[in-house]
Length: 121
Image 1 (cartoon, rainbow, N blue to C red):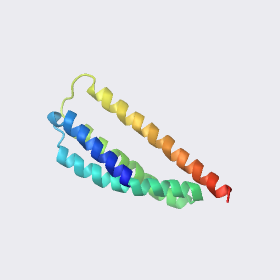
Image 2: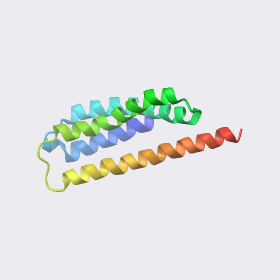
Image 3: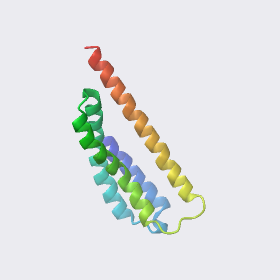
Image 4: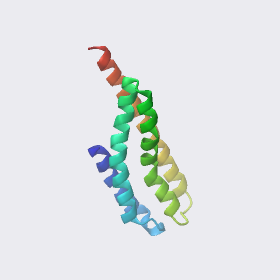
């Protein structure tokens, strides 16, 4: 959770620097980001644990929470930003896609490593 919150603070500073002039309320974004970061940190850990332990019912319960809390800050930015200049939308979408891909790969590695650790016991 700590890493998620630190990353959220970093993202909030970027939003303040680059997007506040386009209608994004940075205080609202910060609150959404911090609450989402904490909830995402917990839910993503639960998703990994459910995958590792093959607890499919738990997985079905935690995946929507992880997805919603992951997407909430970005959704707020896209919904609250006014008219963004030229390539800024493309840059934002690219950042979201790249970070989502890194997150998915990171979770996959966590599941794989935890399963290997369980098998070696």
